[in-house]
Every structure is written in C-alpha cells, then in structure tokens.
Figure (cartoon, rainbow, N blue to C red):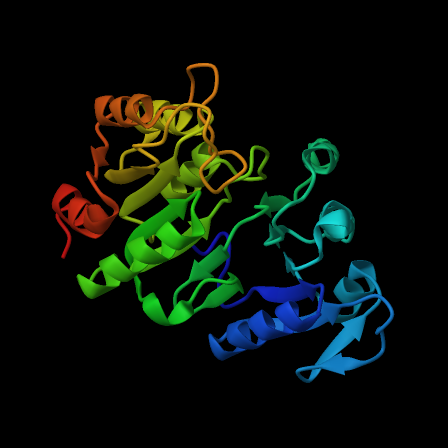
Length: 290
C-alpha cells in the first residue's frame, strides 16, 4: 500500500534510545530511508551514522522527513505525537505501550482536521515488504504481493504474514493498528485504504474481543468493499469482564464478544478463520490465491 509507506518514505525516529536505535537499524537493513533521530539533550550528535536533533521541527526542516516512528516512553509519547504533527509529518506510527487514556484523548482531539495520519499507539507499525519498515515488525517473514494485512494484535500480524508467505502469497502492506481503546487508525479507515489501493487484491483482518470496531468493519465490508476479506477474532474463549492482553480487549456490558463479531463478519461475506493456525489457508480459499 504505497499510500502509507514506500521507497520514497523518509523516516524520522523519535526516541533514539536503545530500543529506537535497535529498530532503526533493522529498518535500515530492510531498505528503509531512515534520515534522522530526535533525542532531546543529544541534538547535534549522531547515532547509526544518522544526525540527531533536539526536536521534530528541526529534523523535518533539515531532512525533509515525512514519516515518524515513536519510541518515546509513555509519559511523553502523546506530546511526541503532537510534536510530529505540528512539524508537518504526514504519517506518525506510535509503538509506545501504556500511554494514559486521557493523554491519547487529548492527542486525538488535537489531530482532528490535521493532515497527519496516526497509526497506533501500542502497535507493531507498518511494513511494505521490500520497500519500507516503520516500527518493530520482522521484515524477513514478509514478501511482496497482493494481500493487505490489518490487525489489532502484533503477534497475530506476524503469524498471518508468515502463513501467507509460506503459502507463496505475498503482502501489499502489513498494518498493525494497535489494541488500545483509543487509536489513530481504526479498522474502517484501514479497509478504506486497502480498498483504494490498486496493489491490494484481498485483505486479512485480525480482530479481538472488546469494543465494536470489528462490527463497524463488517458494515463497511458489506456496503463498500469490492475485495475479498478473510478474518480471525482472538479471545473466543475469554470470560466476560476478563481483559486479554490489550487494554481494549475486554468484554463489558454485553458488548465486545467474539461470537458477535464473528457473526457480523460472516453476515457481511467475510470468511472467518476457525483458528489462528488457519488464517492463511482461509484467505487463500476465499480469495482464490496460492
């Protein structure tokens, strides 16, 4: 999906500490144009041969960065998102887990009406195989091809990508949207991007218990998607009131059950995989690929 990340993406790393440097190096190895880092107190220095700046504004002015990945700790991550947006960055991918909900509510309000797209937080990022890696996804398991992957779960993103690749089915873009209650790019917006992308012929969608994002996605698929969609819903055996890993993965008030999500998706014509081990095979059969 070249509209999110491609060979022309110029990536800025916000939070060039140990974790930021590790994944910046992996992104460089994957062919990504990583152009700079931001690390307050170290501006004017270098890391991995990349210039370091005090602020995102300085980095954008000096390098023309148009995408950012955030490895800033939770207390400052929402401000880092807004700093990137104020600097004019088009795509902001926030990896940070544990950002306070009030901070994210404030950040999302501030982003309304701005051209910046936020992916995350608490997500594995964006990977366009053989072109661009933004975040923490293992690029070595992916291969270029026609299937878009969008998921609330990082681990299941990797599982789906690996299954598809082993079946000889490549991916257009792999997108981890995050499992928090408040995120920048929900399923419907991701599906809109895949529907508009000429390089995507089919979509794998991985949801989980909690919230109603999957039901909204099912309505979008039924009403506006022309491309085949396969899905898996995690947490099918979770008891009500039990949080399963992600902050947003909790069944509450009779809403968010896996059975309701699966029924809505099936009614919309989505092929729902019975287990995480069959995601790739389900997509292959439904889309006639492989």
